[in-house]
Image 1 (tube, rainbow, N blue to C red):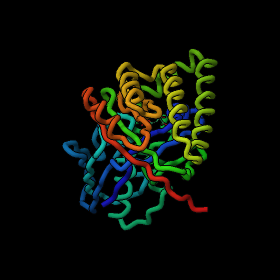
Image 2: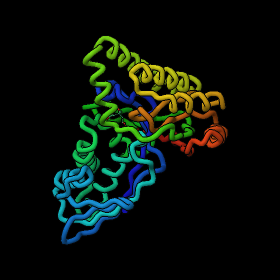
Image 3: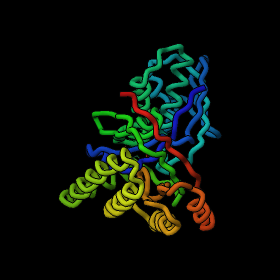
Length: 299
Ligand code: PMV
């Protein structure tokens, strides 16, 4: 059996596609996958199933992943513990967990680079232009600093991150949201590039906050990041009201996470996620809490 984490992007989504660093973290909920050698390759995820020759995204993604691994025929079963399309990295977590399960069924050597390149092939089908931040977070524990092309670096947190995660709206397509930013950038390059540079400054400062344990400082930077994402038309009324409810209930900061246009909001909590979850539940928002543990980074 193989597992992979879902993820949240703490700061830097979308800008990361254009080379700005992002900070992301794995969350406990993710994907579990099993694979065994079989006469033909099959994939089942809950009620959905696919063959590598199917003319569907699932079939094409599965085929791309198997080809990237050079794997023999395998029967794969995966269980998704995350809502898909909500910015919580469900598709990357599926790619990482399935790649790990296939590698182990085939008796091949598992190394992170192989898992990530198979996941990139899988994600390419769903996504169009993935920065790789989702796959990197799905394959690692704790909090990471990610830069497109340069890869990831684990971050040493001074304190645990206590997060409330709420589903602020119906799922949105990451591909469509990434394309909408690209179109806006073509039309108004100066405005979008200025927002991207603003996000770069926030991400750099957020790293200092994480390393020194300045949680109120981190929360403010998340709020500013949300404002810049709204300026790129990635927010919705549902996201804004979910953020406002969390801040009013004592969250240190709140923002959309992942692609936006719907999907999930994260709120940085001051010691306990329950008060934020209670307010969200009262408003009918599906939600859960997650803790990202401060971990020691090997020297
Ligand atoms: O796949 P999502 O919705 O979690 O978004 C990933 C983050 C983006 O920056 C929006 C896209 C990317 O590839 O980095």
